[in-house]
Length: 483
Image (cartoon, rainbow, N blue to C red):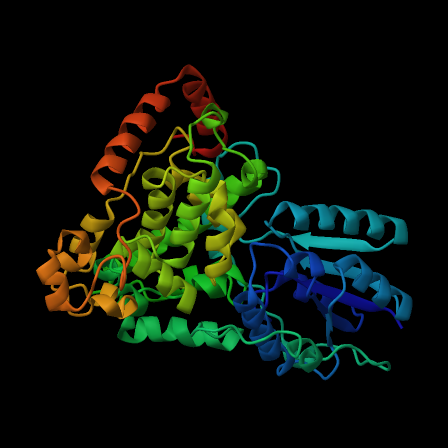
């Protein structure tokens, strides 16, 4: 028997799935394959929360397909494909392109070589509107609009000739036993969950989106909460965008829908940047920043450890990090602040913190992650330099200190605005509010006023360097849409 293999990666759904549609049309029995690859399980960008989300997503798929048509492997992808080919015969391999880390790209090149050697046709389909190998952005926006408005590739699952095994294979339960449930409370994975959360957004939860998205507290409910489902492919960007169009005439929602749709557009824009210059995973996209002075040695490691664990003594920073560790989610403004604090106030190289945030972001998406990290670190030479003040962010976005007190309960009796700058508390006030700095809560790791001034002077001077300017012109030509 020969089979059509649909290799699932970051596209864990059964709707708007062009590879699945093409495999069905081949006429061969359809086998779905997902690999918990050792190289990714060991990769510092990932943690148990990601694999729990993937397991939940696969369980959702497994409940909707014929028994045995989802094959789960704990081997490297190439080994798993070889096993399928030896046991049966792969008539064709179908998948989405993965805009992933360097290790997944090297894996894909090895799979392509193997397919050629075996005489297997591998049909790859675009990830959203991202174009592989693109070197300029001429007409990119038109292509994005065209892709997003095309009819979704929805297969009729009742008519699928699903693969029916005659040998043993790895069950989801077998794989699940290998993963301990991660501590914390995270969004559950799965296509059904993605559509339920999206429906709730339009049913009223998201009406205040445009006014609440910058608040770390309000955004938890008012934002779409689609990021994890988009990152792991439980729902396609096209499906979400077309849902916006379908609700465009809702009374009182226009500002929210405009803001939401613009962020969907940014989603592909940043992934496209990573696809077009993927070595930004390892280096500054603007080589003019290669010699930018950074804190190093033991002091750097101490600062990094305090930042990673939410023990910097800066309440807004620590509350955001502890929220991320426990839930896997924080809004965009606070993510930007965390990176800004790491790179500007702590003077650390962005590469020291990039894997940690990937591990705690349930919605880790490599393309967006690296593009955004470098932008917020101020090493692109083309974006506005933003040095966030954690105190100002707290006073403006959490004026009553509700968010901070949720994640830093030792500060629960400190009134606003002092809760955002507890180092200003006198010894008598510390006794009054039940928090002793240095014991109950850390002293600030840096003086924010001094670190802000130093970062501002350094970054603006560095931006004037000839090599930075030269690189900036190259970056603009490659990644920015021409007017």
